[in-house]
Length: 301
Image (cartoon, rainbow, N blue to C red; front, side):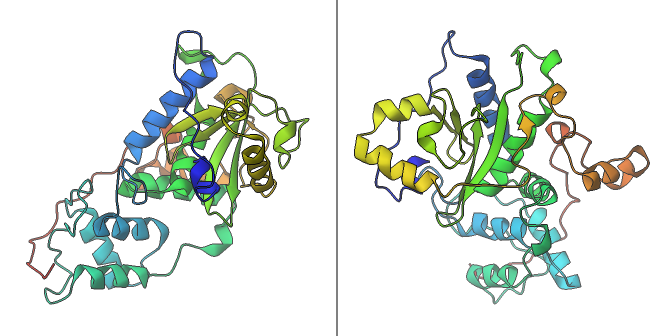
């Protein structure tokens, strides 16, 4: 994460190792990162998952909406295509709605012609929920979708029902750097400190990055970097902004008065449950199983 937001000007600290002496929060954070990766396993911009045109097409589906009948049919075909997103080549299967003379690049451009998701929702709780659910539906995401999914897993965590005990309110914030285009979570920051003043943070503040699957503390950063590197990090972090939802939340269900938006709760009311595949808690959601695809046609790769 650090090398990304500093554009490679500082190295990565080692992620927090798990030991019997680690805090319950560290154990829980690793558990939630694991569940997030299981829910949204495919990423298109990390060294261990190099660029794949098929993953890029699916990522575009996560972030766009099909407004035409053909577009909706194409989305359905992509969803049921059975493509192996672990591969790095042009590995999409033939699609009934896709003319055989077109290329994969043409398909990517067609999907990119779909309008982007509703802009008025951006930086709202509904937008975060939308990102988390769309990432789950297609199994593809980047920092925005992964951080949103992990954020809600932290909020929904049933404190009284699990082995990992969280016995006091622990703050959680979802933050972003627009210029560097990155979003991640900050846990356990003392709210008497200033979000944009890294030096004021308590040493046991945790950085949790669902995109890179990394966790490290402020104390680790101070021990890893030179004074000049810390100065650079502090300058970059002075531009941090909270997403919405991003403030006033805590790890664990019993510590939050409200977790999901009113829209989410309306759509998950008992009377509406038959219409939606999402349960009331995102942590209970499973990727919907699409209908079997229609007969496939061959087309140019």
